[in-house]
Image 1 (tube, helix red, strand yellow):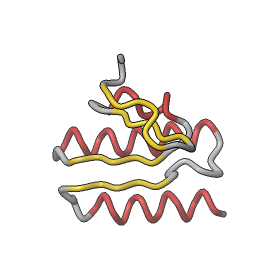
Image 2: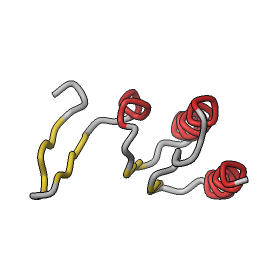
Image 3: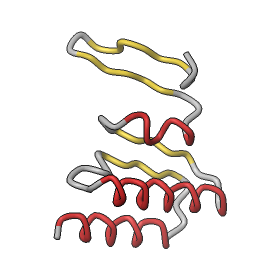
Image 4: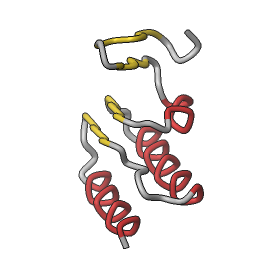
Length: 86
């Protein structure tokens, strides 16, 4: 399935222990449990070996606990730029 392919691609990337992790819609087409599994895997990887994480995602709330900066884009460009609390 598409979700299994996403998980396999993520596992391969995480196994390389990158210094930069760029995820483009990593939870697309996943059910809520799959979304949590992907997010938790990224969190474990970052805990074991810190890296810069860039996530392009519509499901922002899932990733907020891992983020230090959020940039929100709209039709006219940057709508917001700041910490998750802001």
